[in-house]
Image (cartoon, rainbow, N blue to C red; front, side, top):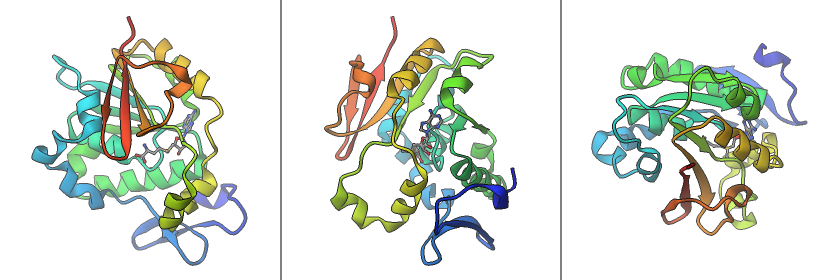
Length: 220
Ligand SMILES: C[S@@+](CC[C@H](N)C(=O)[O-])C[C@H]1O[C@@H](n2cnc3c(N)ncnc32)[C@H](O)[C@@H]1O
């Protein structure tokens, strides 16, 4: 679907400029930008990323991960840079169009080209995408929206533009069940540090940082 045909909340529009497709309210602009993350993609830094450590799969040359809640694709980028082949799944058509544009720009950026080649976007609901996979994923990664604390949200106005598109996660049970039904070696869930387990599923292990926690569920 062309960006101009997408339904947007009142007061928001998609605008294409020299730096790519952006969501704007007329004042602020939000666009995906993988170049911002380049310092984190250096091998020495990547190995310290909690997500990379949580998703790591031993003995598989190029593990296959489904990022079921891709958003603007930053977590997927870290995984692709760490050598994962990533299918990015995003159900919101506006967010998916911003992500598609970000991926396209990455393909034309020498430092990101190889990484972007390992990333494939699928627009659709993850519960359906996971059920229709033709290959068993090594990892399913879940990062559905968690209700933000007012104080933090106020500090990042661009993030607030994004949050006007994003629906609160009302299908965490379905998302978790679809992830487990795809029979991955593990499901990795990103949560706020003190947040409850997604769908109440107790993880086999967790890696906690200062702000977020990665819960790893290893199905038996
Ligand atoms: C918190 S954001 C993810 C941020 C992402 N990890 C990143 O690095 O940019 C959650 C995203 O998941 C998407 N989402 C939530 N439920 C989904 C589902 N069932 N299928 C596909 N996408 C979903 C939302 O539209 C939103 O863009």
